[in-house]
Length: 573
Ligand code: FEO
Ligand code: CA
Ligand code: CA
Image (cartoon, rainbow, N blue to C red; front, side, top):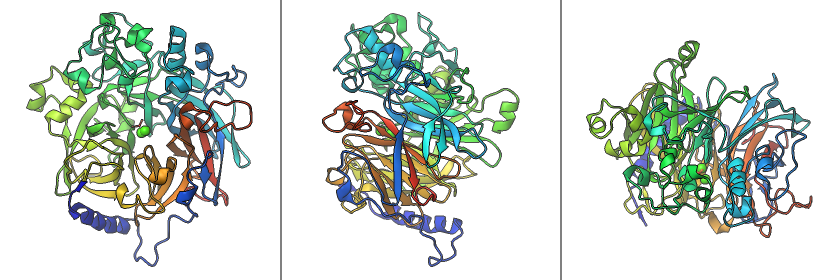
């Protein structure tokens, strides 16, 4: 294994001291430990049920198959297409809690349904008819569900806002690529839907952003198909990835000329207004097309919004979008702050500085290759390569800390052979977390960066972990780290809390066999934390039947956990 020098890490500790100062702690002695709970020991992390710190408790809610309307069809495995369209989807991933009551204890939970493999979702290795394909399509997308707190527990309430958005829902396109030939097919279909919904974001005007990641997996070819440069760069292959939607639904058949541009209609950030169940989801094309992981939105001092985004694939890039004008002004004039602005891609220099490179036609390198801005945005990955963006070790979630530092998980990259300063491990088996601070209050084109942590440095310790994926930094300076991948001593995926000032790490929760821990959102009072258990047991009831060990339902089901400190304190503390 190769590794670059400790140079950047030393820079990191200087930055840590600077970050420390910005939190207003005059001396080390007066520093209040942000993490006060007893961690889950490494040895406890192989249970069939989640294990949580003895200072915390959890209960489950919103399992896959829960009817969206309280009197809707009950879960019956495997679901029919009609039932699944009105039940909670599978593959729970990124989510956001939107309070709707004054005390914040009643709200809407918007949950992404990223993926569900056929054996888990359908009980067969591949669909044999269109009905099964429709079931699978209906299990993807997003659920919005109203929930409320009663005593110390959460439950569903009401149904006015409850809705399902899936792979066949009517959607709109907006921004520079809307109406462009690159999105048009011979067969016009407004029911493009959304799928591969990975991580998420929340806008300051109260809408939900759901981010389309591995959309390529749902495409394949029944006839001959040879991927051109742009298709290959987005991972589109004749064979597909085993979902086999293309065998029964022409829309996903890469060899069907009627749907030539269908893959261009995925890979976007999609805006959903949870408070308006009649509103259509809008694909915001100004934010670029790639395998979007999440969208961390922050408002700059002048009112413009800045959105940080990772593209989760080995050697892909980190992006940011800056709105053209202050968001309130734009919205007052009936414009969307997500439709007009500049998309930038990140270059990390070896010396700890960095540059945001705009992806626009005014760059002669891009105007030489692309016909217009819509084409740049549709093939943002190719544009990023042309301008010299830094290939990263699978950028996952981003989060903006209260001191302005932006954190990004780089989950792993076993294919890296040459380390560089920003990706110092080769191969990078267990991942790392990078952070940067932009000039000019998030608006500038230069930044300073350092490495917050390298998972290998902790991997063999009692608080070890690998493959950081989900990430949220709270207002006090804690980083919530959720994992998806190989863990030390074969323990299950986990949720850890890190103090971004001191680097201390403690394990709050471990999941169940074969699951991923993902999705992180809290109530405004931060007394409840919601996280998701994704693909428990990969659907194999012999490994786990979480979350329902006793009700006769044997298939394990993705679900949300509501977590609280037993003493009612701030979650993560
Ligand atoms: Fe959806 Fe990159 O995990
Ligand atoms: Ca992820
Ligand atoms: Ca993941």
